[in-house]
Length: 72
Image (cartoon, rainbow, N blue to C red):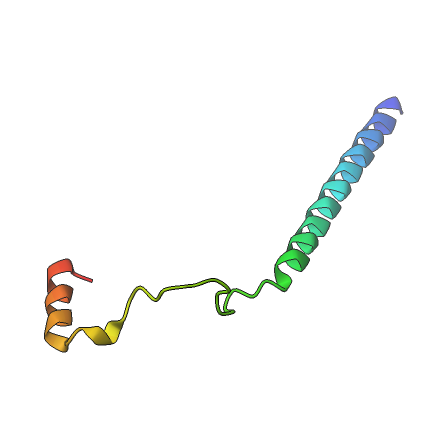
């Protein structure tokens, strides 16, 4: 009889720990989601940004040469 009581007690402990960890994980994911929900990554930059790459500045022969040399 005591072994059944200890088995139920240990099962209840594991269930409570599992439930607490699951709830912590769930609310942690929700907090991270709300933090990054309004993050606008495609807004124009607020500082003096300089465009580094201009694909129209090279003609087709130079681009093909670069493609065959570098394998890009």
